[in-house]
Amino acid sequence: MNSEKQTKLPKRKSHKRTAIFMVLFSFAILVLVNMLSSVVHTRFDLTKEGRFSLTKPTRQLLTNVEDVITVKVYLEGSFPAGFKRLRNSTQDMLDEFRSYTGNMLQYEFIDPFEGITDAGERKAIYNQLMEKGLQPQRLIENTEEYSEKVIFPGALVIYGSREFPINLLEEQRGRGAEEVLNNSISLLEYKLANAIQKCFAKGKGSIALLEGHGELGGRDVSDVLLSLSNYYLISTLNLDNYDIVPMLLDVLIIAKPQTAFTELQKFKIDQFIMNGGKVLWLVDNMAADLDSLKTRNQYMARPLNLNIEDQLFKYGLRVNDNLIQDVQCNPIPLVVGVDKSGNAQQQKLFPWLYNPVFTNANPDHPITKNMDAVAGEFASTIDTIRQKGVSKEILLSSSQYTKLMYDPVMIDMSLVKQKPDQTLFKKSFQPVAVALEGRFESVFKNRLGFGTKAVLDTIDGFELRDESIINKMIVVSDGDIIKNDFDYKNDRPMPLGFNKYVNKTFANKDFILNAIEWLLDDSGIIVARSKDVKLRLLDSERIKSEGSFWQMINIFLPLAAVLLFGLLYGFVRRKKYAT
Image 1 (cartoon, rainbow, N blue to C red):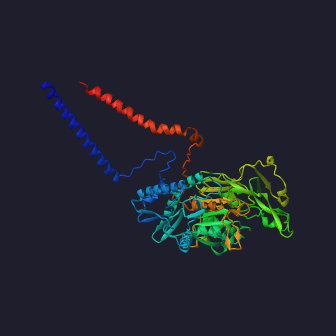
Image 2: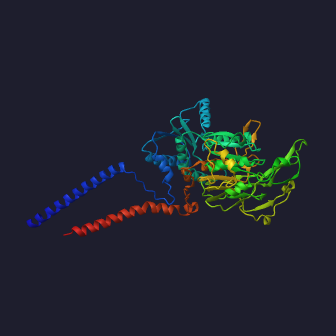
Image 3: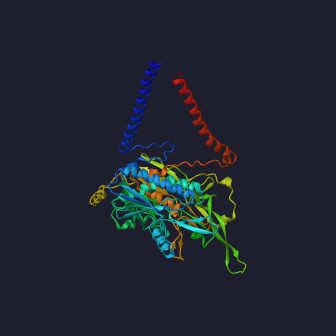
């Protein structure tokens, strides 16, 4: 009997020592893991679309941060669930950014109206945030009495004396709330990285609007230029005033020229491109506009003959001598009679086939990602031409039901009275906007004499090139997409893309701003615009029919699993240590 006790006691002590050793060993591993985690940065993103992983250009940007960046986010307070999700996603993204900057990025969430009851003070804060570039949103609160709450779902990125606004919530424009929220979250990385990149720029980029050929300017383009002026220096450029296009210029916008370019003017634009300058071509190829129909019911539209056909062809495309008729179009108002008093004229909206609504032809391109339709007016089609070393991406196109009218085109107001025969609209998805990238060949290659070259060699800072460095350009066959209406009563521009007749804002402004960003982005930050966060919604019908069943499963299945594990553990233990 005593011998049995003596053999059991050492065995129990051995088990006790082993257990103590395992506890101490586990504790040491935990301490070591924590020490390593404070030194080594490692995160695991198990989502299919890489939702929580930053793109390589963004990571490179953040690792080069050398001074403190402050982000003020105006998403604090009592919000609906959707805005809370946006707020939490913004915080997660900022935490991810900060992990790569070595804590050089600081952020705070602010309720700008917290504790402020004075109406005058609230209005002053409202105007101050608007002046900074943040856009307000009005929320209807679910209370017994109707009330509205104004919020600013945006942020300010501050670096030294520089300050850049970010509107975190995408515009609604006919999309469901979940889709809008999803798109907003998917663009968080790009918006934040883009603003930080602008903080580091040595100076503002420079954009010039070409003039001298009847181009759009002044009030006609004031809305988009006002938005661009937050980030870029805006000016005008007349080619006749310069020997060459100033190389300090980053982007040249050619908006709806009406008269032909001379060979010298073409040469200046060509060499600007050859030396890395970016051009946004917004050109009408046919002389057609609605104003011509105000004094007559019909007229003949003919080509403008801008003398840039050979130049664009050399770069890789051709704008055709035709006009698009599209069943997917915007209406125009026409007088149909007088009112009951017999004095005022009555107007009615009629579909106008020459006002096409362009669809997003490339949902994965950084320019058109998550972008709505764009409103057009008297557009032509574009053919791409095979050019070695130049890639082309179609950005916008007409709808499925398109008809082409070839030169000469009779523009007749009686068209509104005719119901379109869709069997005749068979030219589906015709390109109207193309992005080109690569090495462009000069249209003046082997065309200049020795005397001309000798004169050009005397110009300081000018390098004659037959082929460009890696470069980009965008060509749109509708100059009116950059044109805004003007509110003369209040002396201010209407938002670009806003159609007062249908009370809808199209994505014209988004397209122009995104196009400029793409042209100027050499770091690859804009790639983050292509990130896609999948919208995985629950099946509402299955929730109604099977909700109780799955609730019971979630409650009792874990309990059953724990109970089963306990029984098995007890059974194994009794079997192992039974005498």
